[in-house]
Length: 178
Image 1 (cartoon, rainbow, N blue to C red):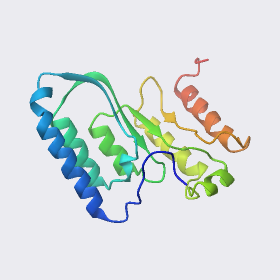
Image 2: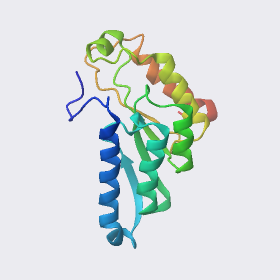
Image 3: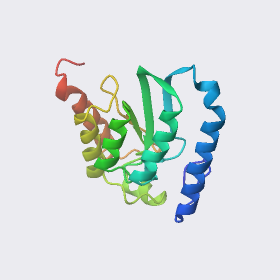
Image 4: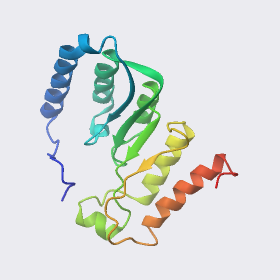
């Protein structure tokens, strides 16, 4: 079970290589159109770009950012799966000045995660990654997004923890927030 968007297992690197080659061709094709345009916001997702290894992620972001100009105060957001994000990938995102990450948490209810083949994801894993992102200032206005899709069976003890954790992170640096 996956989300409703087209999805294939990436068990062969050839698909990733084809994808990166295609993105490069598209960017090369449109580079003259974008040369005088300053982009304010970008969202890289609709999938999980963090499934790419560190070299592939760097290549993708280099292809994009070498061919477009971005407003220094604009928003750069990337979609991420907690299971495929590492501290090194977060450092890559910081190098490319990302200031927002949208985590596809979906749920922290173990039954729901099992049903959707996401048993690999744990609350501790999500908490550690969100804390690391927050501590490394990859956020906009103290914001890190957590996508919670499967809320029809909220687990008070697990799904609510993610909300409490997010509030705690907001208040940690700004105790006067309300």
